[in-house]
Image 1 (cartoon, rainbow, N blue to C red):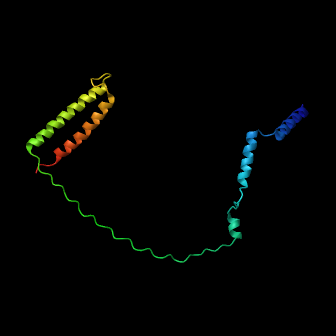
Image 2 (image 1 turned 30 degrees about the vertical axis):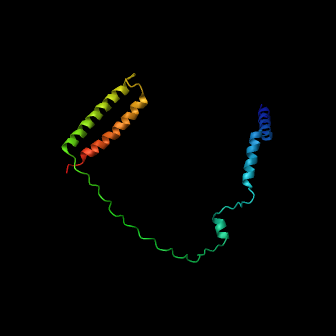
Image 3 (image 1 turned 90 degrees about the vertical axis):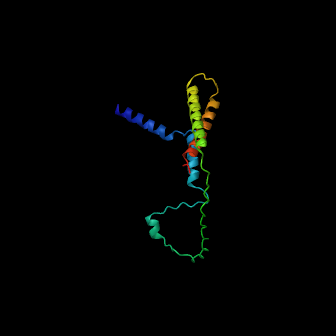
Length: 149
């Protein structure tokens, strides 16, 4: 029994050792061998023994010429302040009314966008108009926030 087991194990080991590689494995091994022996490149590993056995010299080159000085930075002159004429109470009232109209339109468009079918029927139009309203509201509120002079 022991003899048969040893014989079977020996045959299996011999088969495994003598088995040929598949074409893919052969190609991979050939590529790895080529990478190891790349023409024109020296294979040299720097370790402690290599450093101890070689001698080297470190030299400093001649100092480079000094670079010309940088040009002086130009000081930015203060930008002139734009003086806007003061807003009359009627203009302020018109701005407040326009802001209220835009907010109402924005709310209406938001409600239409939430519904499955809206009067406008075009989601692209709703999105574009909401973006326009947002920009216009920001401009009007900025104008309104300017202190009256």
